[in-house]
Length: 373
Image (cartoon, rainbow, N blue to C red; front, side):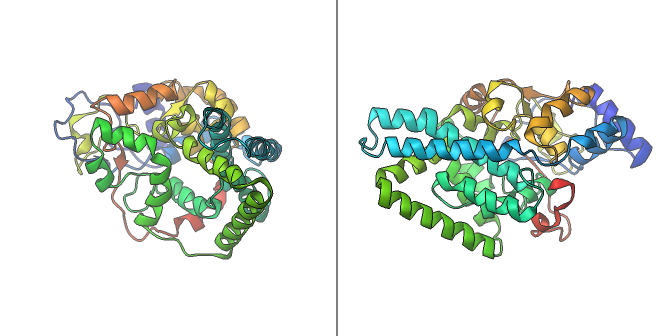
């Protein structure tokens, strides 16, 4: 973390919660052994920074709360995808026209719906929790496969237990990192990363099956059945292909890697279990694709204040600029994908992990109703 940002957060920590260990960056060579993650015993800084920002700028709390615009945007994108599916129903599957529309329009639209569901999972479309759950199922329909009910608890655990091994399912497993630690391996991962994000959580730990999961599955199966019956199998193939391409080598898919993979030189001690030097584990992206993705690129801002909706994250960044201006960030998701594949210093090992402490749980997602989580 840059020195000025460290100083601001440390000043708050010293006056309120005691010192944070080893916050200043240290000059050192990169470890020659890259076959391990960046281990940390320090608390992730989002909570501390949130408290410091509130103390310095108490007005930011007024930015919290649902954003009604999300509802209308979701409706527009759902109708757009249904229109495209109807228009392509007689086009040969995998023809140039079909693939072009699937990649340019369909993948972008379904990535937008992925991130709408992400917003909705934080109760940021409606004030009513049940309204948010049901609306997420609606937003899920053009994706073709049911996932919104399962996504929410896994994602909220990602916020509550960022980087915690065995809890944060956004983290690649050691098996993934070991077998995909090459140029071809990273290219494979980027091409099929949507499958890794879909399957990995169930391999790390399983959630209890609830009535919401059942409703999500039933609604999706009914939608798919009616789609095939009235528009043909090609329409469903278009939607599912759009979802696959949205999480493949697509510019908007760069956010999956940009958010938490560590880029840049890090201290020698960063990969040791005894590490006390914080490694930047969340990166924001400040570029034009935020306009298509609910400002998910403002990711430090989002983790600091999950209860602030996408439309107000730029205001948070502006108000608390002294906390964000010096943090490492990205300006291009396309460049992120390119660097991830080709740079030997970047790969699946480049994630910050923490060891699981106590029984803080796999039910963590159920404990995050406060602060909009």
